[in-house]
Length: 137
Image 1: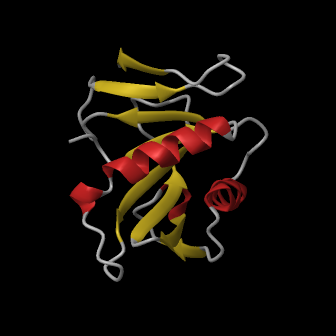
Image 2: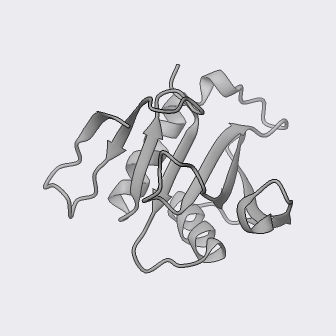
């Protein structure tokens, strides 16, 4: 099972609040909440619920993804009944939509595994058609 984590960046987006707003707007999410926690880079993160999924957007400090500024974790929201293992297709669609919206997107096959493989979702500017490339970190 692939991970439900994405690492993203977008030229011209320099702060977490702007990134969270832009990417959740791409998905059609209307309600976004800012939260504070010392467990996250810069002490803040944003969270939203979308069709039974909980989407967390935070700063990224992963060694394996230094070119990506933000981290997205997708899980069940505890309300809509989505199970973590059933979210893979949703995460795949989300990654492709974000890439088509101009984000640089990487998805590790196994989250937290240093040196593991991951998928790169190319933007239309990178390639005439969106190609998913598997690479070793």
